[in-house]
Image 1 (cartoon, helix red, strand yellow):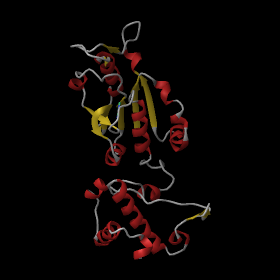
Image 2: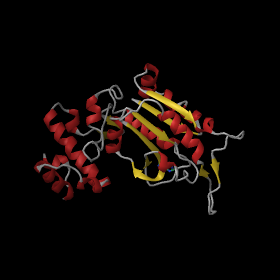
Image 3: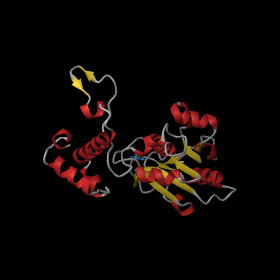
Image 4: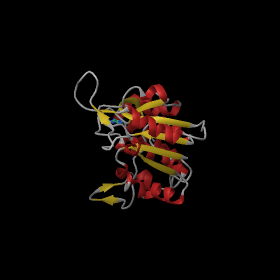
Length: 251
Ligand code: ADE
């Protein structure tokens, strides 16, 4: 898979793209990230990428010509059917794990890092562009959003994560949060790891994880439960959780 990032701050990505498994994949060449400086596609000596909005108002707007030229260059040549162009924007469609899965199936993801008040709307007349937001808050620029998107997509690719099991137990895989986790020491300043997790009864531990995941989702993100696929056992657990019971009270 190839990811092309169009930005006015290519150096922003220098360090993050060198770290961890993502850095290794890039070094190995199993994932390709191409950074494109939008200013390289300007025609004036000041390399201008923004201008005042028509009709007045505060803030600047990203000019259409440099982005048009940059996108034409990165999409030129071979027609890649599984290619998508996205624009990071607080006004975009909300990015989530489903979107990450959808993007991980592409051959080429092009990310335009939005800046300022936004991008001249005419860009959408020339390219099929999806605007994407990583959450209901406003960032100074889309570079941080692009990094978040790249990392969540990358970890779904082969080799993007240590163990596939780990990805399967991620929060949001089934539209619910993951269970809490513990590691050694078993006791720290009087606080113990739940007894069930210290034992060897794997079936009971599996049950505990499910209970715990349902409990976390109910407490923190009850909205997700509307989309979760629940079986009879889950429904029973949810009734117990709603009644204030803990795992040890019931199982
Ligand atoms: N640019 C500014 N805010 C953003 C957000 N929440 N998501 C994506 N891009 C943005």
